Amino acid sequence: MSMSKNPLNRNERGSAAVECALVLPIMVALIAFTLLFGRLFWHYTVALKAAHDAATFLAMSRLAEVSIDKTDLGEIEIAKIAKSIAVTEVAELNPGSGATPVVDVSCDRHPCIGTQVPGEVAVMVQMKMFDIFLSGVTSDIAGSEGILLSAEVRVPYVGN
Image (cartoon, rainbow, N blue to C red; front, side, top):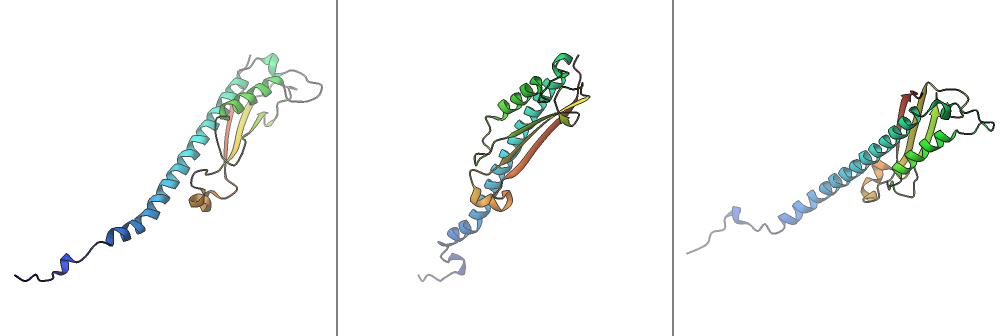
């Protein structure tokens, strides 16, 4: 019995390696960008909640705490407490590269110095986030200076 060579039974040992070489970079890029955007949205959500909590605290503070007349025109104590609330809430984040979040508190778009009762208070949390896991893959999109996240919450002052 003679075995005829069928073109369909050719040797396919190297085809799996070629398929893996073609698909693996695409899969690594998909995983890298999924991790990057997941961390990005997580950091932004935490920053937004911190800004919301601090702004709500400041907006509901008593009138006597907000309208204090300071002689040095420095930030009023209740604004410092609101800032520390936001800083504490974002302290658990690890944006990478030693970056620290910046928290800014304002009353009627000016620093809260207590000279008058504000109509609106705002808290802004800003930070730069770096890809700490797959920076070699995502550096073209994220950049070496990081992605700037800015969460700002403005609420009317309702204190009594």
